[in-house]
Image (cartoon, protein in one colour):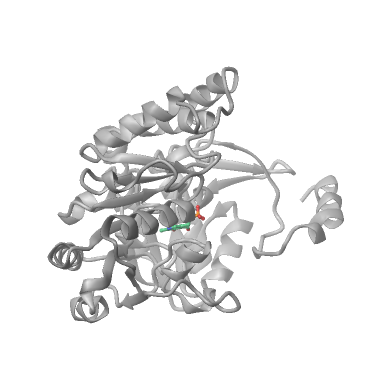
Length: 387
Ligand code: PLP
């Protein structure tokens, strides 16, 4: 860290609420799959803002779209229409068979919206989510997050939430009862924060069937797994289901804050003016960037995700210290015998950014545009650190 950076950090560290255990690195610039710190050291970025910078830092089309919108209009309030928001809704609706969009600013907010719409549309209150699942830190989303450690000190939580074990249909059936009060089953196609655990297609199809049979909705949280990260625009496309509600955020603005709830026809009608809102939701600059993101997720990009994902998974599986490789596309993890946090630090010292997803899970989330040479470069660092 530079001297100026160090003195700014020392002067101001105590003014930031310590919700994160941050590394003492100040990132000042990014381009493609690399970022630079304030001393000019570069890092190969296999965190990507935790599955946010899908198209790489400073992607030309996204940057140009945001710049152009910055010079036209920053904000108008949702009392009026804006062009970028309308265009984005149209693009997302095309991708999800005529769905209607509600825009917000984050993944947690998108899930809050989903829970409210599910309750309003069904007239029921109960929610079934998965053990280990993660849906955000606001009270509703936290209540549906199956990680009890994250609840401590924040109760009472929203009542009416039950949890089932991932990939265990019997456990799901048990959690659903009494089904007559069930509003929604909420799941991530790949449990990201919960250890990069992919759901099996059979389990997800059972969840969809159970929801349909009992008159509840199926909500798929694609905040981490969506927008091309697993090799298809929506991760659910690989699982043979058609969800009622889908949430997006992270990669949608490639780094500008924006989230979305998509509600299919037949559910969307439950919502009217005044039922929900967000001052910044659908912000013109974030929406303009998001339009460019959605347009950039084409067959060529998805083919790169598949090819680079395979390369990375194969390389990981050849490392002796990796017990298991998990994930889909470029949402990947290696389960280690030891502490993944120490590996994150050792990689950073060698110019590679990676992140954990649990004490022994090393998570890799490179931009979807990552090249063959960059994957090889990351594997070379991992080989050195893990040997
Ligand atoms: N849902 C999933 C699957 C996530 O991975 C996350 C964040 O990691 C969230 C929701 C919460 O998103 P945000 O931090 O934007 O509120």
